[in-house]
Image (cartoon, rainbow, N blue to C red; front, side, top):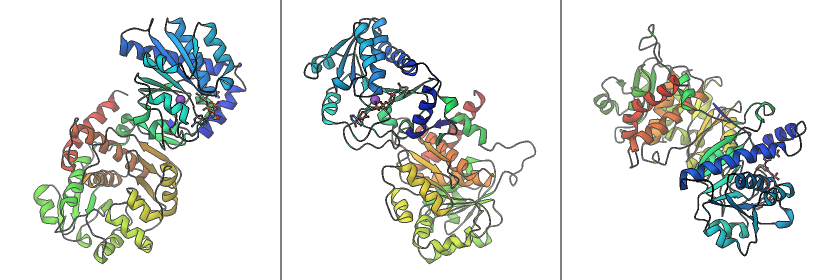
Length: 483
Ligand SMILES: NC(=O)C1=CN([C@@H]2O[C@H](COP(=O)(O)OP(=O)(O)OC[C@H]3O[C@@H](n4cnc5c(N)ncnc54)[C@H](O)[C@@H]3O)[C@@H](O)[C@H]2O)[C@@H](O)CC1
Ligand SMILES: [K+]
């Protein structure tokens, strides 16, 4: 599992490490790693390093210092380095001296266009973890004129370090070289960061528990239920699906199909789409009502059930069964309108809510806003539930404070019925007895992987995502074996 730390925690850890490290040592470690990455990118994109041209965009803080020191290291590899200082009087003094000593050139803002035009690579050292807001106009103008690949120092300038939010001009990097630890921006703004490379500067022992986690495929493999020799269809967890209606059976078919593929246990369906579900998935035991569905170890409830009195009663029944519940779509709207329905639930029984932004607004009375980590955390606290906040990056928060983020593999999941597939995956994992935060986090990973495999560069459909779940699980299991 990858750990991610907020800038406040990073700064505190850096302070502890700085106190026991010779002056300038951490920056030199960071800059050496940065220079190596810039050289590698030059080699990849142009075929050589020596004789190539790098332009450094240098802001007023240590982020600019990293860029200047990296420029000095690149000079040793024969790179022609020019630095554009956005605030010459505030540029990092030691870094600037090192660059000058190495034969690097300082160019004025007025002369910078001709250097930027001819650059093979541009290094963004405008602002790092002390950034506030978008790029200021002088920096924005420079960045706008860049055609060469950009290597961002620590993070792409203009993107919020702790939320990944973009609110105006910013850098879009080909590669981001970060130091010591991943920060939220790296998980939440993947399209601005490009490839993220973490350079070890010895910070890890000073960091403590991460604020945020990212599951790797091997983590998913480690928790995904695989039957053992003693297992039968019941022991692996039976999931019940209460979804869809006679008029709209699609949600029922998708959520049920997803559950069929997710684990080897049994799937029950209860609702008005029983006929359609049975004919599409003959392995499912389908009945007309949740009251005669038989025992299940977890319920999926919501997609396509409607938000009227019938849907409400259905939800109340399911919540009162003493088994984990994944409440999605219409169930979320019912809970938002009538939170008393949750009285049917024993507070110790796991509940997973899976709102998109609109449903979140209904649940919380406000939009999730730019800080989606805090938004998900607050909803998890309010509802004493695991909250999976859908979006380009899916955020999963547990009431105990754990948060994971699922960085997308493209935007292929933004297709009708995709959420029904996700909820089926999560329900199956809940039925298998997984911790609800892990169930939601692992379900989101497999969902996005199945989406990417189904799409392969062209749009797919929710049915395509269902069909790709076995391939996604093969990739997950292979990652588990090779880790
Ligand atoms: N502290 C340390 O031990 C280390 C710090 N490192 C580097 O230091 C960086 C942090 O340095 P600093 O705390 O000096 O701050 P930054 O370099 O992030 O920012 C410096 C200043 O830029 C200005 N600024 C803020 N928002 C801006 C915007 N939108 N546009 C233009 N200017 C803006 C502010 O006045 C801010 O104080 C890290 O991101 C990393 O690159 C690394 O060298 C590793 C070691
Ligand atoms: K930067």
